[in-house]
Amino acid sequence: MKAIEITQFGKPEVLQLCERPMPVPAEGEVLIRVGAAGVNRPDVLQRMGLYPVPIGASELPGLEVAGEIVAGDLSGSEFVLGDLICALVQGGGYAEYCIAPLAQCLPIPKGVSLIEAASLPETFFTVWSNVFDRGRLLPGETLLVHGGTSGIGVTAIQIATALGSRVFATAGSDDKCRAIEALGAARGINYKTEDFLQIVREETSNKGVDVILDMVAGKYLSKNIDSLADDGRLIVIALLGGTKAELDMAQILRRRLHVTGSTLRPRSVEFKRQIATALRQNVWPLLEQGRIKPVIHQVFPLAKASDAHALMETSQHIGKLVLEV
Image 1 (cartoon, helix red, strand yellow):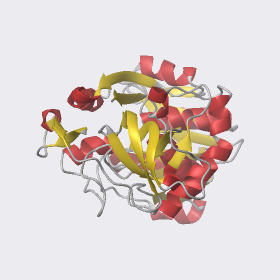
Image 2 (cartoon, rainbow, N blue to C red):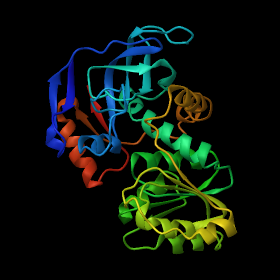
Image 3 (tube, rainbow, N blue to C red):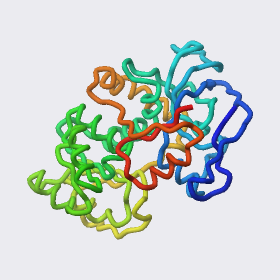
Image 4 (tube, rainbow, N blue to C red):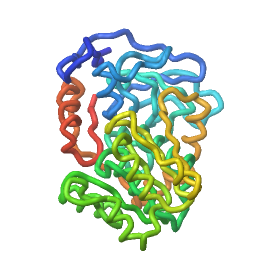
């Protein structure tokens, strides 16, 4: 099969088309003929040598795919050979064929194309696990999302809004702020020209937000803490702003704040099965009703994966980048 490999750690050009043996599914796994694969920030970090591959996972990049089940263990499931599905995978998505745990496969929502479906698993699993499981966001509460035009950002904004929360989100330009407001955010905040702490306080009558989804960390920590309401929850999912910062523990104690974080890739299949079940019950109907939608910025052919990575590094995109296989 054709696949994209990381020939060495480095710039996008190290991604090269190659020939690899077709993977063989084990018990509880299926073989997918890939139609499209999503591109995510962890793929970029892996290419740079900053995201170690979990033991037993494919070293090929790619954490989400959509395609046809062509072989594997379908026992105990609703799926049959030939079904079109999307799946969260441990790696290997940038290829013509990929294996996935059956528990991490979901049917493609009605009305969603194969290309669009490939953009769903990584961000939707991540957002549900962090915003709604760890962050316990409830209808009527408020959410601040950093990186509002990223794949994670556009997903969090739409799901939270559809489920009854008020959302604020940061982005790097006025045009991006208008784009995330069009997706349902109550207020886009241009972090280059505005102070998100000041805006949050103004928009919440000085109360602060209930939950913050943060992919920056570092220098944002102090302002994030100040932006939280009492009993607020700060969820860190990436460290684009650095790994270290000073934390005011007095606020944690006095205002009963929660600071937590997670990474999804190393978690167990059973953990991800629970997220898949929650998404099927709570979010897939919203996709089928058109109340939330996949946001695709650009589609690239598989052989042009390096171009997709180069674009992602500019942060000029709004939504997801997808490889068509």
